[in-house]
Length: 197
Image (cartoon, rainbow, N blue to C red):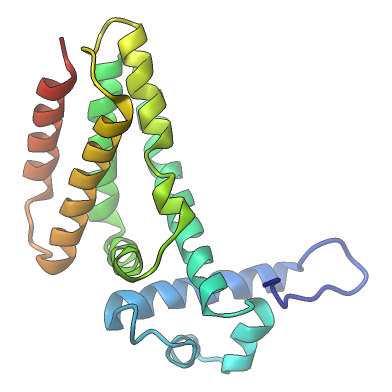
């Protein structure tokens, strides 16, 4: 279904429309993190944003489109925070360590975003989530080509690393005082042992 966002006499949305969409997405994140995915209706999101439900309907075709935008925005924020640290590493082992630590640090600095996405992925199927391990898989494969990592299935290892990080996210949502520093250290050591020659 196409978005109902309308433009008159121009090629794209105005600055105000972009800002309003961003506000709605942030309120959706806050609502889902606070109430849970099932209770986060468009009415609840609109109420939190201080707007009418029809304003959301103007910018998004429905809840599915809004939820996908939440996923896309949180993924983009995570990538902006994490990938520069990962790409700054000169070894595959350093890349893997930075990948794990930067993900856990994002949880620490964006707890509502993590709570919202955890809720969404528990109840909502997304192609973004299914494809999330693809860049990691390629980096693991590069480590093998460079002779730094042992032979293993990069796809299965990427799935396993992502599953471990996602589990930390779920437990952090349930237990906000979880020691994330310890989690990052333990995961880094575990996967260093699992991948290194």
